[in-house]
Image (cartoon, rainbow, N blue to C red; front, side, top):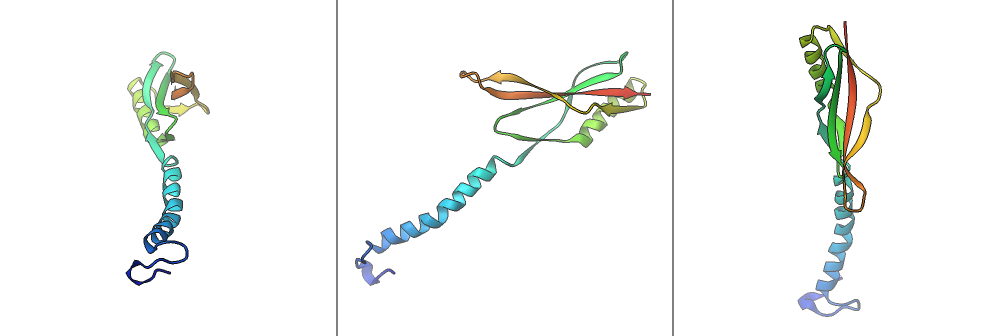
Amino acid sequence: MCYPRGEMAAGGSCRIRLLRCILARMVPIILALLFNAGCAPTLKYLVVTGGSKSDGTLTMSYEYTNAEYPEVQWDAAKASALERCVGWGYKGAEFFDAGTKVCVRSSSMGQCVRWQVTYTCQCVE
């Protein structure tokens, strides 16, 4: 409890006690905000990075850093693949199940700091 005119209490001055109280309440909030900031998804759009008209295949990729939590926009990727396949004379496009992830940039200590994820898409008749 703070006393009038800043008189000393058993645990110290009112200002110090008030500061301790504020810090005790703010630290958990600040920590929660910091930890949750790294969990927010980063929208990623696949772009065509290669392909073969005669084989009817496309490769589509996106990149991300360790600080990002990528969320692939699959509807946009499927629309882009379909547009390319139809342009080549095919009727549809289907993605294979899994992509491949490779490191495209490393730190001076040898740890990967940027990744590229590539998916293959098959154009279908």
